[in-house]
Length: 255
Image 1 (cartoon, rainbow, N blue to C red):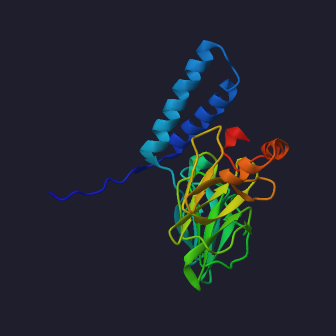
Image 2 (cartoon, rainbow, N blue to C red):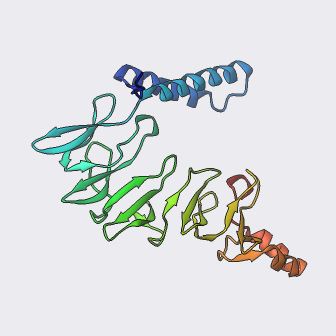
Image 3 (tube, rainbow, N blue to C red):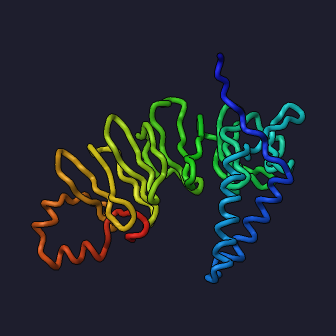
């Protein structure tokens, strides 16, 4: 028997209005500490999770006069029909602010606000939003193997990254040429080039550990300097205290 992937049903205007209501009620209850409010918050939170996991909340393309636009699940125009095509559309429940749009063979980010004005130049071959983050991967036509990272309309890394992992602990794992790096954004934005054999942390409240040539080390927040554990141990107590005070690249709760 042939297995066919089941397609999620499209979210409706009524479901979107229910989601809006849940969000508003949860916001009202957020700072309440009585047991009844906490139970209600958890109940609404579960319904929120069930709704977003059970339906397709992506914007849909529509066409007018040979151009394409986007409508959200309520049928509201979030980008008018003024572009040739789009990359990944926005999600209703993420309140996506920008989406990748294509015009004359080039891509840019455009506002998802009903007007659709560009926030970047149409100078990229492809733009991909990195899930659950404010960052985008951007490619140029002359090198589709490597990409850079963009945030706020600004490219913040060289075009030297080949792949990325799922954001976790306010950091995005990055990979190139069999090596690992990181984009940490819990304590400001710190880009660590993929040149390490391994990068890991031990969860919240810990520094990221960077392994290179068999040696473990950390990277300073102040000047992004790699210091091996051996080098750190050789410093004076005052120097170690100064580095601890300045901080290392870390998971959010440790900053």
